[in-house]
Image 1: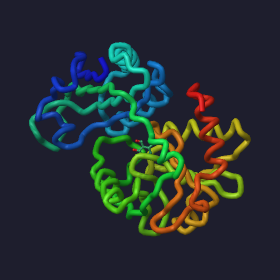
Image 2 (image 1 turned 30 degrees about the vertical axis):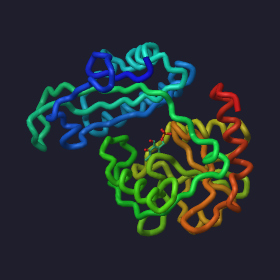
Image 3 (image 1 turned 180 degrees about the vertical axis):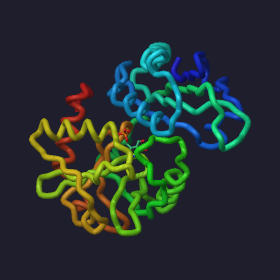
Image 4 (image 1 turned 90 degrees about the vertical axis):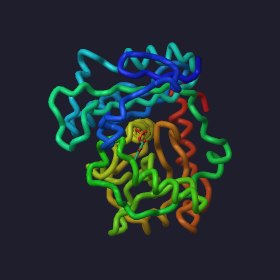
Length: 283
Ligand SMILES: Cc1ncc(COP(=O)(O)O)c(C=O)c1O
């Protein structure tokens, strides 16, 4: 087995997995999700991902009983059945099935869906050259700290960036404030110190971001939350991204300009090595 789905209690092939057309996730994007990696069959930073899923559920008042029906055993069982060395686990909870109406009916049974797939590797060439990022106007809602499945602005921005030959889009507010990429947080290295945009409601509080902060602390590097604008980013010593699937990825180009001299910076490389070492992933 290498690819596997789970829907409301039942494991099976992804191609056979089904949910109703009246699922509120399908009709309204009324749901939340997590993306988790499994290394050597073991979920990485699982507690942190599940804690964020609970926070997302609470924020949209999605009533799932995490205590009596915990997700952890299902994720572990899926990883065991899929027999994947390194896995990408997608976990989605939607509010459930009901005739289409904005008003949420009482006593809905949330739909729980998971997929287990081989973890795609980040191409070595991309790691070496670093990501090219295109600034786009922040068009998302004010609650991006909720990991909601409603991702149309992210999807459109990512694809526009790709169409223009970039690897990702970076959301920047009308005032020039840097937020995050379409599925990654942004870090700046300036004068030997790390900066991240403030972890307000406007950005996702990345699980990997938190882990990178721990790695940095272990290396004696300070990380400060501070608003900065796109001009500051352009002049930064180094810029890198963090996410569950990228881990740490240097940024070497912003729009038409090189960033950090156009090469993956020394601090970024050291942090990536430390990340891999701590995560038991070798270097
Ligand atoms: C908008 C956004 N920011 C940041 C991240 C990185 O979060 P994490 O490190 O928890 O994967 C993601 C991940 O999907 C994301 O969608």
